[in-house]
Length: 124
Image (cartoon, rainbow, N blue to C red; front, side, top):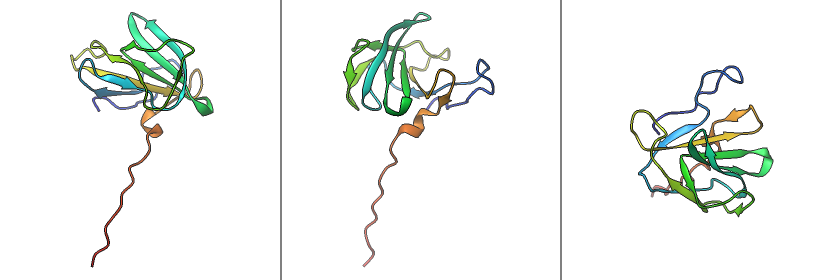
């Protein structure tokens, strides 16, 4: 992770409304969960894919060259696009992954990940 989640204190205030995850240019980006593509196109000169999931959650992936179109159903783990450079000013190639539960309610997308199952072997 290059930069973590830093929610704004007010709706339009400063903050980082997602996480930046370092990855190589050309990395296939996959949907965090099953859902419907809400948007796939340009926002402020950057390619973005947004997906609506159950429970009113919307995830956003940027800068991602879309491999899907608005209205497409996607499965968890399905490729939705390819990572492009240009999100960060420090030159690090990274995916900006955001999540929200309403138009102004951002959540840490890392909370959507399932924790790893740890199995310990008994000592004998």
